[in-house]
Length: 296
Image (cartoon, rainbow, N blue to C red; front, top):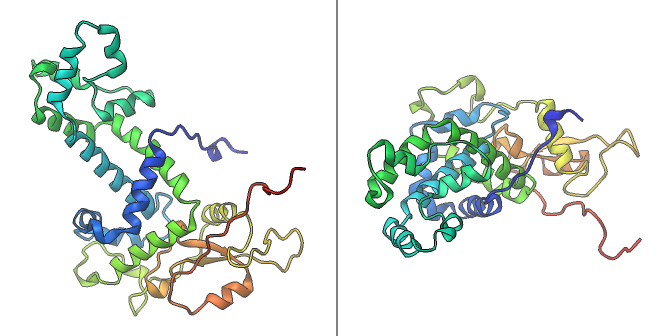
């Protein structure tokens, strides 16, 4: 196996972030004000480019994780941390474990061994100590963090980890692409400055684009070579007639994307059965790793 196909999962809050992203996807109506920042100013036009490896879901995860980091920094209670620091002045050996001077984003950097300027060093550059710090200092520190190489490196690791987990769940893929299709269904295409109109048909639906090999491989292995609807083995080991079809979970006719997250594996009969429908269809059935009732 090529080294590039190996994914190293060094999870740091990955599953809690997956839960947050999944929760936003399932309840978009509860997060409309924040989500407006994801597609405002014609950002949605970039989603139409077919089969980007940094998929639309990658972009959504990045947007969501940045929101989490902003909320974490806003939630830091500096006065409480100062009191903690003062309370343990006489027990200095306890402070390295409590680390009241470290902000949440620094804890994340440390976990991944990513070098960065600390909040304490940032304060020192301004001639201040932790005891003198205020909320404006946190804001200024985070403003520098957002633009740093350390944060870019950390975000690449984090987004990859969250995507790796969520991509395996087709129901999440269905809900996410249904959310995207609702946005595209109500945008004004005439107001988009950077829209590549060659990607659209005359009726303003997306042109069908053949998935590249990397996208097919990803979907085939995620679905373990079986039709997700009837569980037919499509590995072609049993019959050369068992041909796989890469179906759009949300149909193009309903503003589904040409995106790896919007694909699923179907056999020929199931593909023909679903073709023409304008609803998002997938299944929540997956190949089990091992049977629970077999001790052999």
